[in-house]
Length: 369
Ligand SMILES: Nc1ncnc2c1ncn2[C@@H]1O[C@H](COP(=O)(O)OP(=O)(O)OP(=O)(O)O)[C@@H](O)[C@H]1O
Ligand SMILES: [Mg+2]
Picture: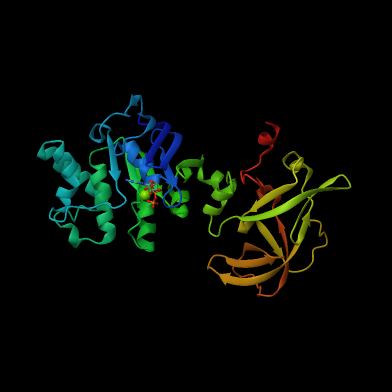
């Protein structure tokens, strides 16, 4: 079993707490993605797992083994670094085989394993070349091959696609996914690219300031961000957040904000009652845009279209709701012009509610807890 467990792991650099009391269980053969903005502690967490950082607090387990004090070479981990460097004076075959040579693996076994990994990564025709004679994407694949050749139970990858152009990134992303199914190693993949995270991860751990803010399957993270930070970080454009006051009129709960007043269904009462303010979260694609006043205007909000952008598969509207700016996506063929007034409605099932002070999601269970 190559599951990876972090128990209360902390790593400090002077006054900076790069990894702050992290608890995480990555299952055997799982593809886990660490996602977060620059400086949130992704690389440090990865390096701690690899044994390249000595942690100040906590324990790290690989399967049943407590590896906290174990040197990197004895952990059975392969790592592709953020700034991978190939040896320029060595052939691709020697670069890939380097880790095995250090382990004094016999030459015949080494050649066989290098060939096998090279085939997996479409490098078999390039083994005699030098790094300077390869394209960026090919070099990237060599860096992955070098980590794979030691047949690690756990594979760590730190932004392995960051040096590639957009098209190559897309190709390599699909290849990495295929590769994961082929090798089946427990994989931890670091990125600050949310699309990469959604596409690759069995689960995503979203990090901020050295802590894991939310760890879940991609769809759950996208649909139900645990707080405003996650909703803003995931999704392009990000989730819209609208502040509103909660009022009671004729026994009904209302949410009133700048330029709107809505009556949420009673199923949201446990979330809303007892509060005076709320933040509503709604993704750009979960609005419905109407160009004529609807017959039932109870929950329709009138707003004006400021900017219309065609992004190919969608048309993105920037909408001014009495001073609050919303991003709303509609079908690309929708005929809409800047300056037009529209009525917005939304899918209530997709609404998220956040505490106006802490900015954390409010769920009925949390309310009653
Ligand atoms: N060797 C070091 N000495 C001092 N501070 C460090 C060191 N390594 C990292 N840090 C600090 O620890 C924090 C986390 O850094 P880390 O490299 O883990 O971030 P990251 O999430 O990988 O960021 P990026 O996306 O930019 O690679 C940052 O504030 C960084 O400045
Ligand atoms: Mg990093």
